[in-house]
Amino acid sequence: MTRSNRKHSFRKGCLTVLVILTGVLGVFIYSIFRCNVSDEEAMSQAKAFCRKLNIQYSTEPKVTGTSFEWFTFSRVKEIWISDEVDGIKMEISCKTGEVRGYVNRSIENMVRRKYRLPDAPTEPRNWPPLVSEAQARAIFFSLAQRIGLPPDVEFSHLYLNKEYGRTWSGYWTRKLNGYPYENGGAVIRITAVDGEFISYGSGSHEPCPTEVKVTEEEAIEEGWRQVRKYLTSEDWKKHGNTYEVKSSDLKIVQPKIIVWLPWYSTRSRLAWVIVIGLKETYQNKYDLPERVTVKVDAATKKLLDARFPK
Image (cartoon, rainbow, N blue to C red; front, side, top):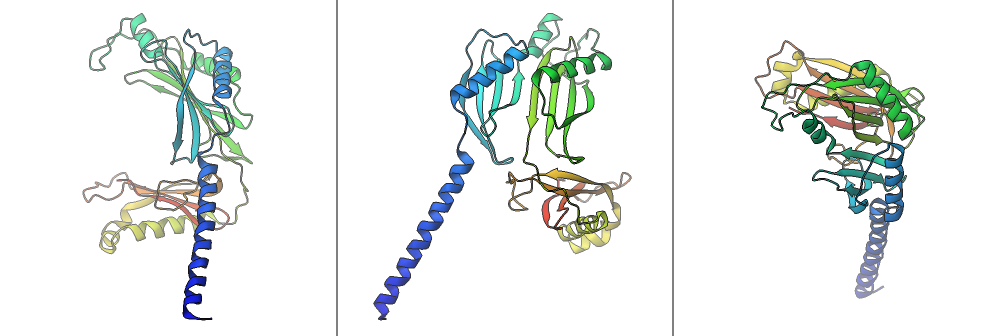
């Protein structure tokens, strides 16, 4: 084969590889950005949700667009119902067609007007009696039944926010074979005054194997290795003994595609979630990370995530 023929064959081979890679990349991008739910189907789901919860509106819902979240690698259709300045915003999952999010931004304004509470959070407010924990629990379970939460979630806890808005939140945890999903489950929020329904949000991820082959000790050892790797050798010598293991739990997580980038896979994995933080008595004067979260695959010991917030 002559030199010119070899060059031609090489260029042809490179072109073929480039075409194949372009095609694979195109299929990958299409699979991520496509939406399996039409605008009509999304609006139908939104209206059905409003009927179940007896949510009144006079303006026809409309699809305002679709959004893609790199953080969760998920796509949703956004629906807006604007009877007032704030109105109602809903999110419909492009994968399942279910209502993933609902928030009525006018409810809190309505409560403030009803009880003549000032808008500015700095002004004193004479709050009327708040909904009790028992009353809030009853309201949450009633709303959960009407919404129709997934069958694999279980009630977790209530939380009363006593700050500016004064709201009750109810949390449900999704589990698989007894292991909780880190970002699964659902949350419902109501006003602490009158118990008016404000918002709903849910997360759902694919199931995964739940076999545990990595011990807790091995996962904690990997957590410490990541801390030592992150700190300078000098910082580790001076401040390593000021850290302690805060928690170690098995959870179903969304692993990062690349550990150090904020892009997550749609495929779930059971992982040890190790939290290592500074001891309570330690005064952080050296700009050290307060808390380190490391996620280790429970089957392979592969590092799935490492976060070092300061």
